[in-house]
Length: 315
Image (cartoon, rainbow, N blue to C red; front, side):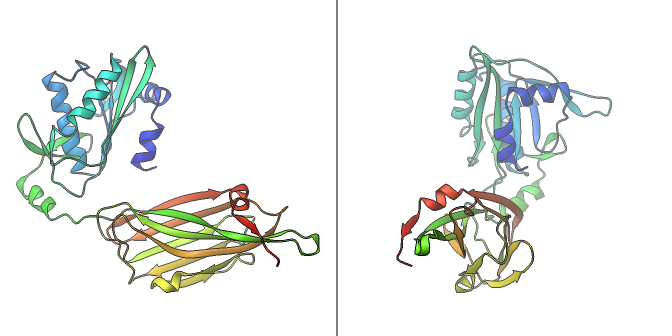
């Protein structure tokens, strides 16, 4: 599970589960209590500044506010209790206000949310993504750069800071689909649909996506005998078709580049079905590129969505 999914999953039930199971702090998870909801307490602001700097300069991470953590027998800080924040709305508002003030340069993509228990009282969660525009300095106090190691934040050594100034911007590719208007044939009272879906990649990162590769797989009831693939070769992709019970396509684009904030169609899926056999189209992909961890995504396109794009034809 990536950080975005983990952040969305955290609710009151999950937080109480952390405490019940004595969840340990680790490379990407930190617990902190809050002294004042307006974040005027120096220690609260210092904790926030260090987390922004340390997580952004490392692999990203999540802070859960309102949870106590103490060392267990192995010396690992674990969730052991809670101190709900009140008023919660004020605290989340102050987190948003201070996000751009307590670290330099600003960390892009930071998110905050409140987890209300009752009467504007509860917990807060902060997501700090890994940054490719660092190093980021914690401001307002000692003015130091931090990084995350294990379950703690540590001041960065000078050579680490120098290395980060040369950190390359990274791509972040994600699946994108587009239904193409198809046709319907009513010859001999046999209603058949012709369906087409473009599969594309969109770059949400700040770096060029190079040496792109993508594996596309369709889940049953669709199989290699039902589906035709087209398009990849037009953009420099070498296509390897794997036959078998599942419809699978591997595209290798060694010469293909996808620029930040842009997208590229990489394949066109075509198939025919009767009204009775038109099922949901489940597309699973694994996306790889230089300077990017491989990611797996799934998209479900319902039969109703496909039908909505069908137009009558005399075929």
